[in-house]
Amino acid sequence: MGPVGYVVGYALAQEHLRQGHTVIAESVNPVAVTRDSWLEVAKNAGVAAVEVEVVCSSAIEHRRRIASRSVDIPDLPLPRWQDVRDRDYEPWSRDRIVLDTAGETPAQSLRRLLDQLEVPSAT
Image (cartoon, rainbow, N blue to C red):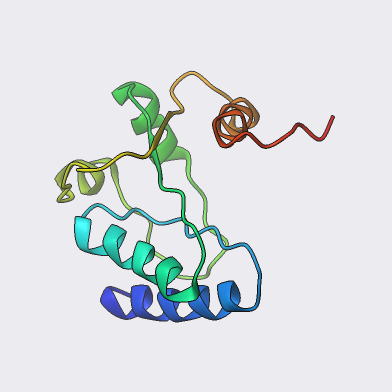
């Protein structure tokens, strides 16, 4: 969807935040302008934001994940490994939580994230 998808996402997120809901904006965000825009959404809604960069430091595992992805949206094209490698990426210039998921199950990664956010365990 390109920039239009982000603009719609920003508007929906801001509205939900203003209603008191928690918003998790999960997207690639490879460039600073989109990261900055998400922070602006939170600021405009008068709430705090936490930035999390999710990485997979194992190229072998990352490639396997790309190849095994499935989609539940009809006709939505998924990126190929080369598409991921060719994507423009601007390194982060501010503090954030960096979550390296290589060698972990989703549940393990989630637990590490919640620990860093200091969210108590449900068990």
